[in-house]
Image 1 (cartoon, helix red, strand yellow):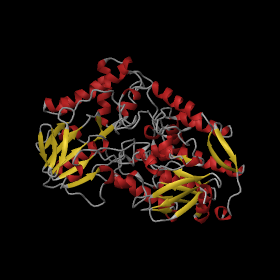
Image 2 (cartoon, rainbow, N blue to C red):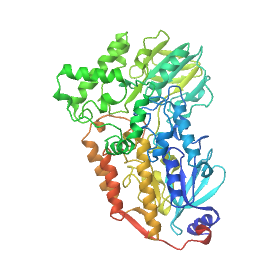
Image 3 (tube, rainbow, N blue to C red):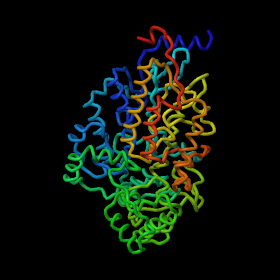
Image 4 (cartoon, rainbow, N blue to C red):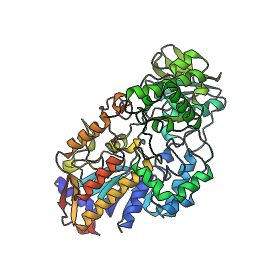
Length: 553
């Protein structure tokens, strides 16, 4: 049977829906809620055991929101929801966020259309029917006109390619796939590789419980006190009383935060004034020191150096051993890697049971059954924790590897660069939408709010197609080039591209370098509205074709 006929027969046998959504985190759950509002049939598939996306997988000790939390890192579309959910802390922990997302799933009756512990193993577009057909690990086959990928930016765990890793005889865990049951560090020799966000959050807790902790540091981090504390009821009350204005401020903020950004330059103040302001933010905790102190910290190197020098001085003050303190001091521009919040991270290195191994000077040669062997010798371990991060932003999409027009896979399409239009759609992949895809603000914007705004754009686009009897939408030829140039141009006005980070793909061997985040904030979402207002300018719209009866049912 010819390939096209085989695809049509397969689609005809599949269960027919209007939309398939992959991922049951903030983005996927809201997309389901929105599409139901259009009267469409949709189903969400997720490999996790619970709704929650990254908050279901990342159960490692110390996992917390590192954005301004409480009533800001949450859904904003429902004022009723804002009023009835009480956040306990300024930086909610993983169990709190997961409980919140389960509450949302129940409140909006989402569970009946969410299939958990189900992994989508293939997704293929059929040009003749203008539909996607997906298969799951349970053997189910489902077809739909629209495929919405809400697979998450930090969900494809990066397992490092270290010789001998599989030979380790002790317990071994990745922070991105942490067990549901409590992991007991008591009395054990624990090693952790990686000091990114998950490592920095977990290390102080593991150090308090383990007999000995060896930290294998690949790159030193600028980390700022989280200042986590009980949420002031007055803040909650004020936020609720002024919710429309608070939400609008978040939408208009460069990073989706509920604060008016500073208009002062770090170079306007004297060194004494700057130090006093930084000290105030340091004592308070949170991201304000980087994003609310001065407007040019992330745009001017001279301004950036003032804050970087301040944090390095803090490391020197906190860590008693000057040799260890020096190893913990970064030498890149602050804020251009993911800005981390911590709870006692630097203080941990004053403990007698903690050892720091700087892998830049003493690299790992192999993992052995009994521990980690570096150039200087063997480090005996009972437990090894991999805090080695993710193939960020694009990894989960490439693991899905859908097939678009002509059977072209996403890996083939993205072999040289991550081509998108608006970060929402991919050339050659009709009716496929992404939430927090590459070339959206994604990880550098309030992610729940960004997911809402992108989800609402997808809903409006689908409604437009239905109202105009259009069967397919995809980027017009060539628009991805101009869009990529815009993303690069916006980023070029910041300091972010000057640092090797997972924003650029530098943490994954062999991954091509591309700064895949749109730094425009509100400007990006204004662009989405403008494109929609012009009848989806830049997209090729295809008339509705007559589909097989099973696909129309």
